[in-house]
Length: 384
Image (cartoon, rainbow, N blue to C red; front, side, top):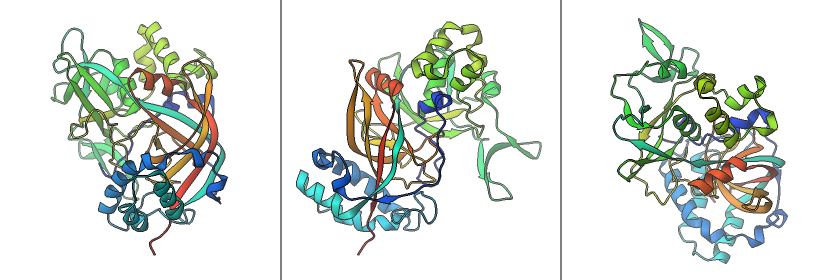
C-alpha cells in the first residue's frame, strides 16, 4: 500500500459516535503563527520524534517528487507534494539527537499555522483479538483476505469505483450482509477464524490488529481493501432507533448493547454495508504500531489520522487538548504528532484521530477520548 493508492486504515471510534457530534467540513483556513504562540512547545521533547520523522522522510524521499500528499489546491503554502519535503528531510540527516538541536531543526525547517482553536480529537487503537488458524467450534467467524474479483478502478467519468464483473457488467461488490450469508464461502480466503462476528466488526472499524492465536503466537493483520460500500456508524443506527442516547455512544456502550441483544446484533451490524479485507503484516516488529496510510509504523501518542483532502500526509500536527486519565479526570495534553494515517470518518481539517497503541489500556483511552482543543499544522519550508 502506498500513499497514493491506499484507501483507509486507521478507522476511528468517531465512526461509532459521529452521531453525537456532527463533524465540520468547512474549508481549510490557515493562520500563520510563531513557535512562541504554541503553548507547551518549550516543554516538548522534540528529540524523541527524530527517529519517527526520519522513518517518514525515508518514505517521502522514495516517492516521485510530484506525488501529491494531500491538501486542497491553493490552500497549503508548502508541503503538499513530496518534492517540497526535500530540504527538510535532507537537513534532518545531520541533526544531532539532542533537545536543543531538534528544537532548532523544527523551528528552522517548519512553519506553524493555526488550523482550528476548537478541533475535535478522538482516538483509535490496534485491537488484540483471539483467533485460530483453523475453524473450530469456538472459532466460527472468518477473517477474509482480499478476493481476487474485487476491483478498484476509474469509471468513464474518471471517478474511482469499487466492484466486480458479473455477466459482462460492472456491479457493486458484495455487502456486509451478503458476505455474512456466505457470498465468499468456499473460496479459501480465510486468514484466520475469530470467536464472533462482533470481534470481526470492531477489528474492521480499527482497520488493523493483532491476532492472539490458540498456540500462543501473535500475528499482525492490516488493511488490504474495502468493498466500496458506504460506512454507516452503528451508533447512529442505534440512536435513530431509540436504543440509546447520542451522548451515551462509545466503544464500550456499543459492545455492551450487542452483547445484550444477541438476537439483533447481526442485523444491526449489517446496517453498515462497508466491509474491510485484511492481509498478514509480518515485516514490522510487534513492539511497534501497525503501518498507517503512509506505509510507516504508527507511534502511540504521536501518530494521528487526518483528512488528507485538506491536510498533507506526514505533516507535523501540534495538538493542545485534554485526555482522559485513569482516575476518571482529564489531563492537559500538548504534544507534537504526525499526520500518518487516514480514516473514513475523519472529515474536515478540524478533526484528528490519535493512535493510542495496543492492548487494554490503549482500547480504554481510545474509547473514552473525545475532546476539543487547538490544532496547529507545521508545514516544511521549501528547499533553498
